[in-house]
Image (cartoon, rainbow, N blue to C red; front, side, top):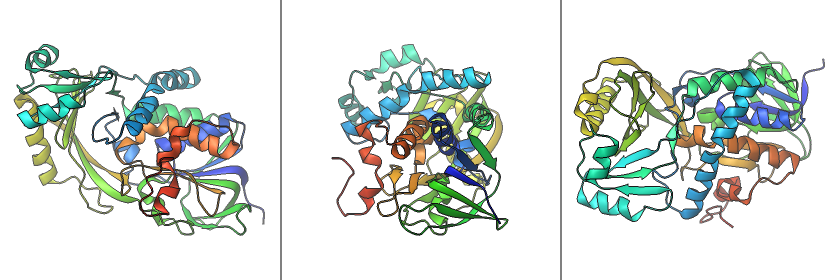
Length: 369
């Protein structure tokens, strides 16, 4: 019996899978998008921070992440033109607070043309209610967006695209013969799909797909979130392992660092307490603000915190676009462009090297050329 065929099958309909499907379809390829909704998917649970400096260790990565950030205004405008759905991109900056003199000295050394050090007086002028006399590093062109609005726009853009077919099924197995042969995907209802190329964009579930040719060190890390009724902040604020994201509509989103809980998507009392404490350390009124909602998401993390984007070293018909960790929203449009470039052969940019799957194949290889 015949089964659906396509130039490319994309496994996963989070922001990375949707951006990849859209970029591939825009290049004229026939795309099947395999969308299986799972509890705890990172895209819907994300805060939507466009953060280019927090925790990055190298100038190469900083440059690459800033290039990804700078794609967003044009990408959001294109989505609005396609769908009528506005995805506001706030770029008022992100403040990383210094709690000690040592923190202040460390952050001040990181200042550059894109990130300005603010002493106590400058910080108070920018955010009068913050309670940190040591100052903050202001990543002045970073910001945030609402991931739920983004998902709405992406789903409409992809769903209306003439070159995309949506199949709401989970993939249970990949099978392939010679490296240049099409890939056969078995679905949960035991039907099959065949594609010349397959994009693995299943987030935290990517490493569990049967038949993936490469061992993917991608594991779920639970991030716990809370929304509170507060208009106290104008900027995204980071402090230690916590963050606060003002939405501009009377809500502020609070989050805390990830914990290893496997695929457990429950929000815990301990998570609420930790979030409250971190919020209070930023601004006392934020720690006691009325709680509106809580949720948790599973971030797909790799050992070095960077995603895998590019073809499998042995089976080039399999393309990876997974493991984005805390940077899925930031990197999604760039990932889509890189995936399309890998499949069509049109050069995108040499900065993709740090994301190469090859970096895990050899010990000591970082991915930079």
